[in-house]
Amino acid sequence: MKPPREGEVRLGYDPALDPQAGLHFVGVIRSDWAEGTAPKNLRLSREQGGGNARIEMKPEFAPALAGLKAGDWVMLLYWTGEARRDLLVQHPRHAEEPRGTFALRSPARPNPVALGCVRIEGIEGTTLRIDATDAFDGTPVVDIKPWIATVDAPAT
Image (cartoon, rainbow, N blue to C red; front, side, top):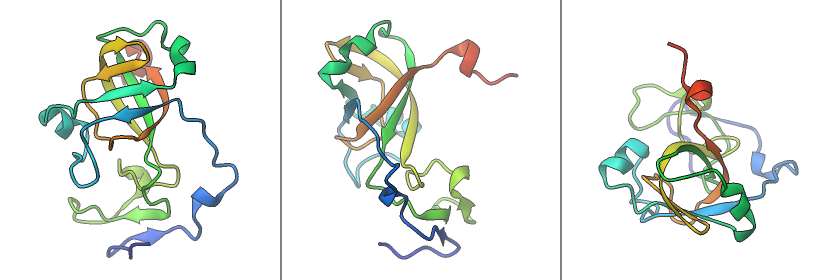
């Protein structure tokens, strides 16, 4: 395990070892990104062309795609399971001071679920082409949820 940076605080145990930590992945993200080449976030991914982003769903989940179409925005939840899970306070390289994990979008968190709002560019069988991802190729997909403006847009 990497040593903490100045100001970081670790949890006293590894949440990955908890027997309640079970999930069933519904697919996998395909992209041009790998460790060391992936952009830090979706904005940067879009600026770099999106990474040839696709979601390959498991065939048994094909019926769950009914109602989705090109142009739809969806919230993609994906599993960054190789990330650290023991940090309560982190010191990002871009920040002057440490911050609590829940105040960051870092993949290092007790439950390494990442969230991205992405646009479906097209659907071919069980593959969804999306506008961008910041995920490494092969990242497991936890869930896909539609972005619904009347529900998800913050009140102004």
